[in-house]
Each structure stands twice: as C-alpha cells, then as structure tokens.
Image 1 (tube, rainbow, N blue to C red):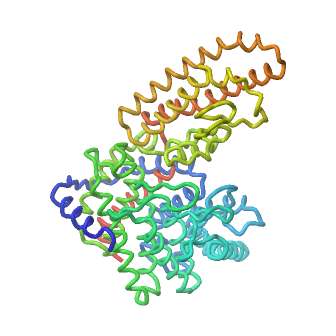
Image 2: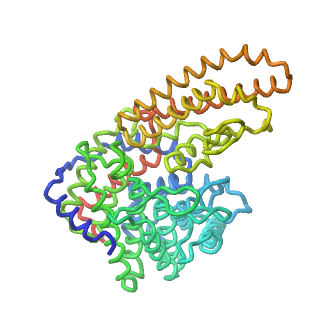
Image 3: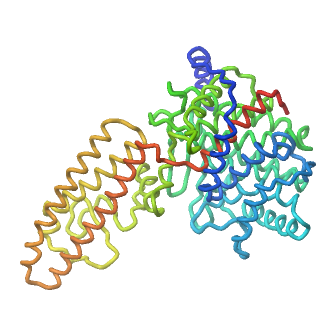
Length: 527
C-alpha cells in the first residue's frame, strides 16, 4: 500500500505526542439554531445544499440517514419537511432540458449529484405525481454521470463536464459516490453500489500522495497537487457515507470486502490529517505548506472519524482523541451571537464575480489562463514589452509608442499590482511574514506607478500623431483600470484573510455533521 510506512510512523508518533480532549458538552441548541440559520441563508450552491440536506437528515431526521438505515423507501412516516423544502426549491428552477438535478453554466459535472440523496428521500414522501417526477430526474442525473461525463482511460469519472479536460477533484468523493450508492440501494441495483466503491478506488489511485493524504486536483487545466485540508475532509466523509450505505443495506454481506476496504481508506486519510493537528486544535489549510488554520475542513474530518468509529471501521484511540480535540476547538470558535465558524478559508464568498476566485486558484498553481483581460507571460516582444505583457480586448498592436512601452509607468504598475496580488495570495495561503512584506512592496510600487501615470499626461499631450495619441491614452487608461481592478482584489483578499469576516457556508453544515456524529458515537449507536 502506497505510503504505508509513512502512515505507520505517523500513527506511532501521534499516539505518543497528540494532545487529548474529552469535552462531553453538547453544542447548545441555540447555537445550533444559529448555525442552521446561517447555512440556510448562504448555502446556495449545489454542493452546499447537498451537504446541508445530509446534515439535516443526520441531525433532525436520523432515521432517514444512511448511518441509521439505508433501506428504501425509508420506514419512517415523519416527512422531512426541511429537506423537502430544499429539494422543491431546486426542482422549481431546474431547466426541463437538462439531465442534471441542477444546472450551473460552467459549473462542475459532479456537484449537482450532491443533491441526489436528499432528492430521493424527498421523493419517498411526495405525492404520486411529484414522486414520479423526482425519480425520473434522479434517473437522468445518474445516467448523466455514468454515460455523459468524460472519464480517464481507467474509468475514473471527471469532476468537470464534457468539453473540458478530464479532472479529478477530491471533492467528487462526497458528491457522486454517496449518491450512486444510495441510488443503487433504492433501485436494487448492486452494480451501482459497486461502482460507487470503484470510483473511490480510482480517485484514491490518482490523488493519494505518498503520505496517505489526498491531493486536491489531478489532471485538467487547473492542477492542485497540494494536500488541501477540506479536500481530504470531502474524501473521508464521502467514503464513510458509502461505507454506511453498504453496511445498512441489503448488500452488506455481498460487499463485506468492499466495506473493509473503505474503512481502511478512510483511516489512511484520518491518520495523516490528524498528524498535522496544530496547537489551536485545528488542522492547517494545506498540509506541509500552510500555517493558516481551517476550522471548516477540520470539522468534516472529525465528523468522519466519529462516523467511522460508529461503523466499527476503526477502534483507534488516537484518531478519536484528535477528533475530540478538533470538536472542542470548533465549538469554542463558533460565534454564539451569529453562528459563524472562524477561522475558515471561505474567503471567496465575499468577492464578486468568478474572476477573482479563478485568478487566485490559478495564480497559486502557475496557470495564467485565468487572467481575464490581463496576461502576464514571458515573451520576446508584444506591445513593445520585453518581459511582461498586457493583452487588451481591442486591437492596439503596433500602435503603442515605444517610449511608453519602456518607461517607468508600466514597470511600476506591473510590479505594483503583480507583487501586491501575489503577496496577498501567498499570505492567505501560507501566512508567512515574507509574503506580507511582498504585499507592502507591491503597494509602494503601485503608488509610485500611479504617480508616474499622472506625470505622463504631458508627454501624451505632446504627441502630434492623433492615432498614437489616442492609442497612448487608451493604453494608459487600461493600465490604470487593470491595476485598480486587481489591486482592489488584493486588498480584499488581504483584509478577509486576517479578519473573521471570511465565510464558508459548507463549513456550517460541517459543524452540524460533527455534532451529530459525536452525539451518535457517544450514545453508543453502532451499525
């Protein structure tokens, strides 16, 4: 097994050095109510809504959760009103022509599948007409995932849709396999449950690092080989949900070997993740390359640990001790007046537009395709620049005066917004002082560049060629607007990274998943 030696060593070291916690205090109902309220207000994405419904099933309708029973239709007679409401909301805005449960132009192919389990549960309590509609929509979603979404040659289904390069994201494991497994139970199709296990196996093959933790993204246009904390949480929790579905279904005997494998794979992730536990009780955003604490992914991993113990997949005391430590930290960092958890890495929720998120996502991985109208590339000659180049949405090739192309304006501006953005991004990711210094240097350069920009007005006015004068003026204007746009983003990033205003809606669901998993484990409710 890849990374087995590292895992054994980590486990041994952790058993000796890990801090212990045995907080037996439940999260107050008033705080839970606030957490649920914040989640309802902000959890508008498909993956967040899917996780929201899973949390509600486990917390408010436990008899409908796969951790209690995976039989379908459910034996409970109490309708899950909150889950039904969420499904009805998505169903009302679902385009009739799509095969997915929800359509998000440019979104991931896997994310709508996160709604699948809640959709099936809602169907079981709906009137005949609505039930037929819901079941038909779920069937289309399953066919779309299995037949239309591209795959790697070995059969691993892409997280991204057709038309894009095949890309495997750790997030996928919480979106698709739990849905396929539950749908297989609902339709009495064991092959679907087996395919859920197979997809986890294939994703593990491609994403697992030598340490045993999972990388975030493999393949495609955006590659993130970092060991992202929340990505490992998505993977671990998806695995234990499929494990619970198998152990609480009619296929528990036929798929006993697969269940054992799943428990082992989840343990691999938890062992490495918990070896990174910080003194504040949280795990870092990225293992080995970040000191920024992430309460969101930490909560999901702790919930996975309790669920794994509940399913008898592990009896490891140190894993449970670390889960208890994380739970105490999470509960202590939930604002009792608002319900928000901090610190988290949901910085992009308060930024407008997708460009900012894509700039950061790709800036940190070396992909320059995300720079919407700004392209920073190494080139021999473009618009008179020898190293850095600007690409504008209008033809100015050959019209940029050489004296403008090599003056202090563009150098200061390029250095300014380049360094400030890079510094802010890097500081968010790694929280190292050197990146804060880089950010300050960028600010200074940008301010100097702005001064040069105003001083350049006279030179522009002295040009006698109207075309060159116009081109120069437009050029300077675009440089200024570009700088202001990117610099404003960098300021937003920097301020959010060091404040409690960062929000992660899915993290609210993770709080509920953790609290419910702990309660079930503490009550001795075993599968």
